[in-house]
Length: 220
Image (tube, rainbow, N blue to C red; front, side, top):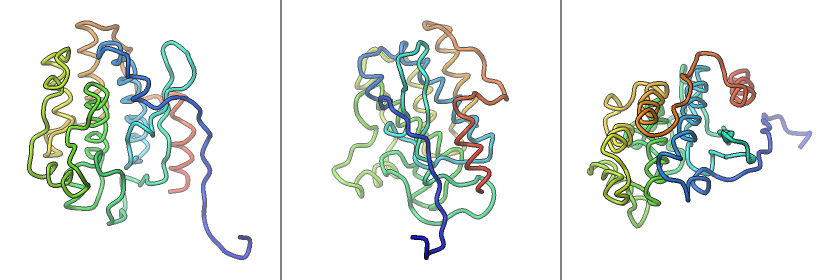
């Protein structure tokens, strides 16, 4: 409405498949390149001082048929700057929110990493780590129970991969990976034991993550 002042932002239209659909028929070893690319993207976003705040399979899109595939993180409508005053309200998608978000109603890099752990758990098992009948029961389970190991639902999952995913899902933020880069290194070490390892992440920005993150940081 030209008579009303306000702000808006536009986002690139991205066609492709969501992350879970792309992983559905892949073994965990075949999924690792996709996981590592997500970690590279999240590491770049965090390096720009941004928190996504709504990581979930629908916001991770696998585009085209390239090999290796190209991933994009989308929907930054809930993103916040890491520094500065944050919105003190509950937001995001409940199954992917970290336990501390319900207590503090604020986000951190650790909360984004927790959400990624939920996504990885779901890719391995076809289910959520906490699958209560409604939002209240899911929140209660997150606050009171430890997540089950993915191998309980998928016996092909190795003990080493169990440890990586469960660390990402730790209830205490300080017990999770310190950064997406550390999670990437853990995943790369798994690749060295059975899947093709990816090149190490660098501080330079992957081109596929650059545009949205730079646009968002410019508006912050």
